[in-house]
Image (cartoon, rainbow, N blue to C red; front, side, top):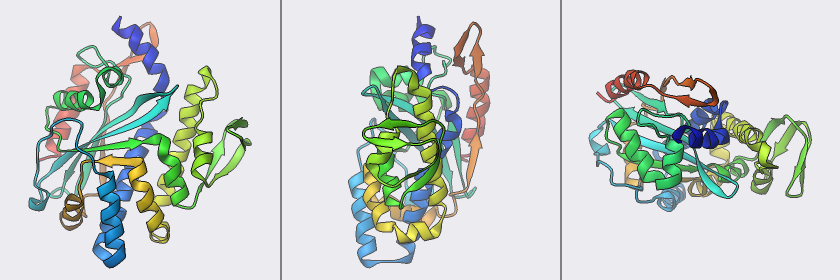
Length: 306
């Protein structure tokens, strides 16, 4: 029974999302680095704009988390969950856990497949569907046997706000289609406005799920590419700050961001930990993560906090 339900859910966000999940995390880290740069370089109105953006994005975490002192340069963990709507229903697309360690000068990232069956016979996807973000975070703590200190939620459906903020992106569209009054020809397509991106993400029909996620992935990758440019960050800083609370919600308050600027600016380098999953025999759409594979990743992740 569990596997049949997982198979149904898993079809929503199958293969091809691994790179996307990493790109989702990179977007947040690039924006965070941007915050650190402008906080350390300027004052006055920019400082006020940054404080406003972070304050608007601030939320209480979905569940109680272990407090940590960023002023004391302690290593800390952050749960980063990516959410998107499918047929009007919020779906957990990505679940990353990051360990930021100023001593090692790096942020170690582990991605847990949201559709893979875990050792307790459930998936993060179904857990989110029935119990929400809090249950997913608690499950991540249990699986990796660590305490989670901070939370970031990313609304992938609002990616258009960030696209518009950075002056638009160009992507390669695999198939021509029309959605919400916009025509998207095959080949190179320029997306400049938030409403264009929303139309580009439209689920065209019941069989379009994988293609819709591929389109979303293409846009995410294009945003990451532009955010690498200091010129883009400086030129569009105001628009990026305006878009930030529309795309992200986070338990990092402004005091935390200031502490990150002072104590963690060298820890943006990313190290990835991959968790291997296996196909379930006779069910091509279903994968599972063995306890042995999870234990290997868990040991590496725990070491990254020392």
